[in-house]
Length: 614
Image (tube, rainbow, N blue to C red; front, side, top):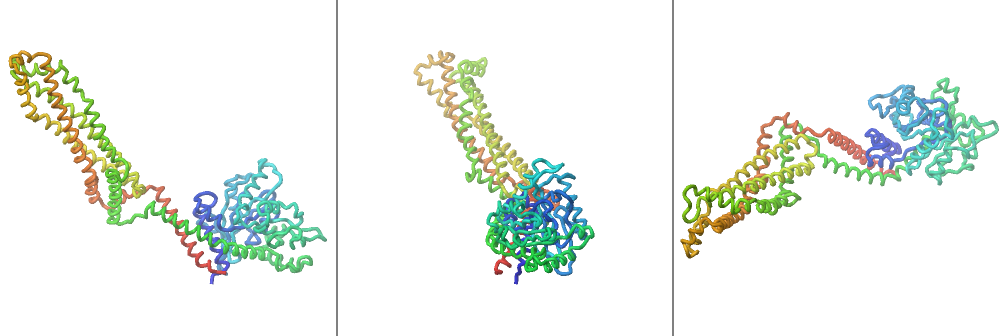
């Protein structure tokens, strides 16, 4: 049957895992939320109130730095893990994850050294926490946060804002609704002046989250006692006050161990005429058990919300892992299959752009419907068929012997010269469609989510696709130029047959012969050529798009990566691995997600195993 230790140990393990993954104190919002959803105990008190001694009494070890003034200058997140009886005690720091400390004097030194690494050897403070885990059979499962002692004035070496800085830092921990406040106050001072109680009252006015601890009961003036405080008459809290007696300075100087100190504390309360009737509810051992019991109650009440947060986080992490992609297999066959699947995913998106499922393919139609007709209209036929040029071309074609009826050679030269102008718009259409296809390749690679983790393969696919598009462009250019050349190589016969008939219709052949070299004659020639060129223009306006689509668009849809597939099939395992060389940032992100997912699933299983406990 699950026990109280199971519940608290579960919370401890989840909090520990959160800190190992670097999520507490800034990082992944989900894990920060999980940390904050789990209860922990924040230890609050004025300087020299006995905070460190209380913590050491709970742990049963002398491990915290000591001295006058401000000693705790960074938050210490202390996680206690109860181990089996007879097992060795040891400590671990988050910043030294593979080192176990069995000498707790070295733990004290490392806390001091790690503090100095951030704050320097000064009296300044830092909000960056130190994370320490202690594994021992002599502790209860708890997470305690030792915070810098509250102070009223700045001393030499501290900034003027130190008082407010410390209070703001402490408040940031105790304001959280899941924070349990352990308010430490010395018994030899008036409780009304207690810094810890004053702050606790501000953030927890009902006292639901506050546990009051009185230290230094043995140092009170003779004839005085703290019964009114301990019995809740001076200041009432929802939870009982606990008195503790820490080691004296003489005991510390003599290195009196914590086991003996605990025994002396029990004897003090048992034999005290003032506190003997409260002895069973006094002392650091009782305080640890009280906190542990309260944690159990709080955790059990929070289980539904914790379970909901964990399940939500698991869904989000699994979705992200699907987005990032699963790890790649190591054998060549599986790697080849993966590469081909990625290529097909890209090819599918590319075709969707062309077919209208995604934007971009409509730009190809724009080339045929707007750019090509506009380019054809701008061709310089007016200059080519001007009266002066027609006369010049016809006269040069006649040579020394003028034409008799229709200047056939002149017509041919004028038409061939005009048709040559169609080469430019034809090639421009090919280039425009090529540019659109290249842009769609780039967009498709960017939109293929599965490819984002493989920059090398992205580059290879882009290179192979662009090489294929270049081949298609060359074929397309040859085809459209061939269309233009076909129009030049064989002129439509009916056009020429119509010319003698027009002479006969003139009615007077002699007059026509006389008019053969007049301005009107050359104008008719220019007009006839213009009509023929217009007919060819309409033909090419329809056939050029057909050729471009056939040679470029159709080929891109059907065989864009065919050559690439052939080359991939010849590669060996090492070369395939290089293509699947992932972005290091993505690999690291996947590893983090996998670790977090493993943590959450383990946490869910543990929560499920204890959630039925009453």
